[in-house]
Length: 333
Ligand code: NAP
Ligand code: G4F
Image 1 (cartoon, rainbow, N blue to C red):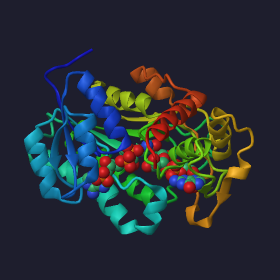
Image 2: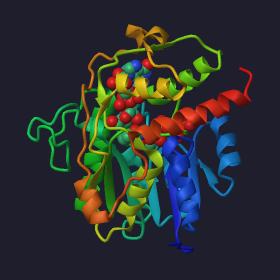
Image 3: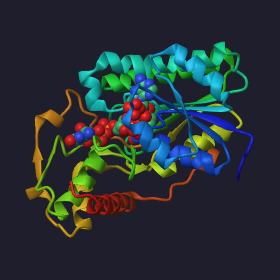
């Protein structure tokens, strides 16, 4: 299905999801605009190389004026707000910045849409997160969080995202704007930042197997996450924006695995059966408050939107390790 008349503005274009989404929107025939921040952002050249069809606009979620300008220039039918301070560990060290970007930045963007007179013509996607839940859903043991579950964020990131979530819902209710929130559980892939645990592991596994590195240093290994593939999840974001009504949707796999499980599969990909000799732990990578387990229930997205996933957990680990092996073979570092 293509739609040549639509244009989209994607914030967070230099991030993991921004890349996957830019590709999907381009394939659907959209004119794609991407918000990029900073005077000399090194990732700008990467976007220009990998997604040459994206028209870049300079702006920052903390700078309301720049967002007004971006909205005026792009005049988008859809805005995907993916930009955020998105690393949970980093948010503990930088809580104020996280509140400004991940929380108040959402308000700045919604105001840019409303005050430029686009409340009725522009649909907005807000990147909400399973970090807003913060652990086990004791009301639904074993069945996972859904759209009705209670929130209990356990990090400055989760708290800031919860503000973004509620202000997005408030603009939907107050001004009748089409604002949908995707409550996404962890999604990973070959474009995942190296600071997140899955990519840190697959990159290290590739380097260890090629003799470029001899161990990896991690934090806690027992937490469990509901890990899916980012390519599947950006399709869900787009489906939310095509739906007849704005709403909230959980995207998840309905399965949860520990970091130890991830290590076992990743090392097995390169023929290493026992990963323990290669893994060290350091409190530096542990958090003041941890989310022990995340498990999501995607029934609503599956039934209402027809959302499907094509990559399962072993497939995800395989594609990430294979990608990193190829990349590490091609560089001498
Ligand atoms: P990511 O790779 O960390 O990308 C974050 C993006 O935000 C980057 O493009 C970054 O740009 C941009 N950004 C940071 N501060 C900004 C600012 N002040 N103004 C404008 N842009 C700024 O994140 P992701 O994994 O793609 O996730 C996309 C969104 O979904 C995020 O909001 C994240 O919190 C949320 N989310 C992610 C997951 C997941 O598992 N991936 C799950 C649930 C929700 P620079 O290049 O300039 O730093
Ligand atoms: O990969 P992580 O940093 O992802 P986390 O904290 O679950 O957050 C990600 O998913 C959220 C959705 O639930 C997003 F909203 C958020 O933006 C981000 O994309 O950590 C996963 C687990 C944690 O329990 C962490 O403590 O891995 C543990 N961990 C253990 N060692 C580590 C490390 N995490 C990182 N980043 N680095 C380590 O060395």
